[in-house]
Length: 233
Image 1 (cartoon, rainbow, N blue to C red):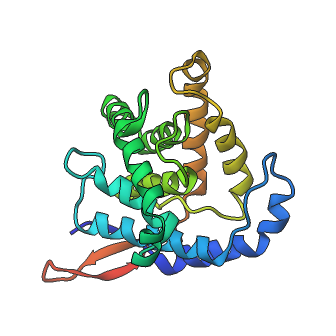
Image 2 (image 1 turned 120 degrees about the vertical axis):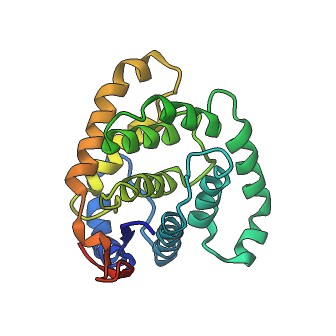
């Protein structure tokens, strides 16, 4: 059983705090975002819960045989766990799946190959690099790349005992404006080649500075050696 899990209640508290302040934050963003609605928070919480289950089950998210979980995370941030919503958006989800597996110059193969080449990097830099590969052109998904990217980063971080990435009042501006710039950069461009090291360091530093121990729960072993219920780390 993994030593660390997500504290879902604490994560939702942080997102609700951000929701209350988001209209003010949105005013100062270079590219204003859509309103942080209850439905967006609900689907993100479903996504964090899915990440927690993947960690609990010991799933290697970026390994062959488990890559479909990356696709499902995107479906969750768009539709939650609602079968009705997935049915209503079946055409969009099918188009996303085709893009995910087959996109020339991108797709999930690009993510896996990049990750394999950077396994020796710190987890902060690996998570940041994967996020950049998700967002840069051509993007991994048709829609929801920022949100799904945040969940993927959270998975990578928690698997190594670091708090998940959670958007907050403190980090929202530092996260959104550079993320928007990444979405306008092509994976194979000279600009990406020249800017990638600096951009990856920026996001790695942001992840580390944003790490909130309240969002992480440690599974504590009891005297008999079994793992007891999670406690705040």
